[in-house]
Length: 266
Length: 285
Image (tube, rainbow over all chains, first blue to last red):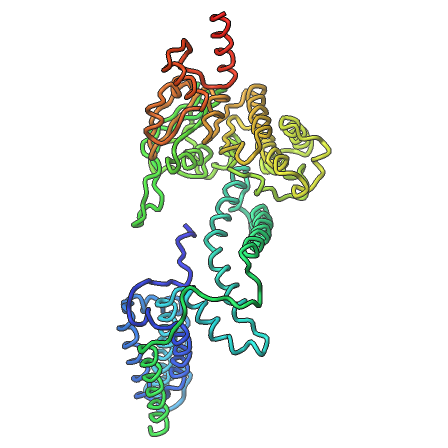
């Protein structure tokens, strides 16, 4: 059933990565992605790959699961690899009419493929080890300095949280309304694209109406509990940087410098 | 003759996954034409799952569902036709109203049946009168109606299809006592006038004993008891074992009997109670 979808694919566990501060995880993921794109030669690529392996080991997420995270992008990876293989000029190893494979082509293709995989895997590690509420908290704290530019991080975090919380409810509602209209003979399967879209109106309209009604009720409910936009709120779980967070930051700074060094020297 | 039957019906949710759950286990039921059947059972006993099999919204994992003697899944491509014969209304149906006017919404079912304009018009007006919806309401938008009116419009939408069987999941849920009485009365009158078989699912024992003539009790996906209403409700102990109860008035009379008064044990409605009390008082004087 559609309700089996797990949004964000969070796998709860007690690993080191799971217990790190979400702000640090978000920022370091960002840094990692930059490092992946900066890696130009073999050694730097080995560096970012090794870092990925280290993070995976510390996350108690299986390598198989990391590999699975690449599945949706498999087509893109294969396509660009093949493209790189045949486009890049250089010392030709293989020529057939207008198709050629050069040493540089192989290098570029391999480099791109590996880095792309690291990028996807790195980002997946973030969502695998951080629950949506943690991510929302972390994001909210990170966006706080932007208040002077009128970016309301707490409102954004609230929007994200409410949206995610209501996705299962909406899915359930869709199933309910669909059944009710099917019970009156709605035909949702036959006909061309446009006919099927029109056939879904008896589902879409009630869904919209009930969403507006729900939004109305929810805003009344939270107002009754004294929620107000712009007013400072405290939290049950305070985010606190701990030793493991500082250690991670230091390690990343060191590796980042090493990467720059490798890029310059080699 | 039995208008709807299920034979050894089995249904599992999330089949093949680690969350597999047997919702219905070897359910055999037989509903006679013209019956007013009530389906009761504790939460999670499979009532909603069972009724969704009656109009083909769910397909049995094994077992059969027979409508007028024929397996409804004999031709899966034609399953929609079954839904015109077995009309079904879910809980809180006012949330499924979507058309611009009540008239159009009630006409949704007949339109799906492919009927012509005149026939549709006839049926819409007829259905509206069954639920006491004034003709003036027909041109209003669903969102300008009261909750009770919306509920009646939704029921009319099913009645307009003139199904042989009408299945209602808690038709009176959330209505005030007058509303409950009115709607159940309209359903009963509709069933009698049109010779339609009625099946309701309800949690109100008072409602079941007041309106139905036959009851099916489900527990954990299995049929616990089935039979005439009076028979089922005279087995208070068995019902209480699975977390159900008997009507309040029945409890009162059981206690009166325990005190030694000469009153019958099987009193299920307040009307009946009134008669028995008056009879008892007449005897005493």
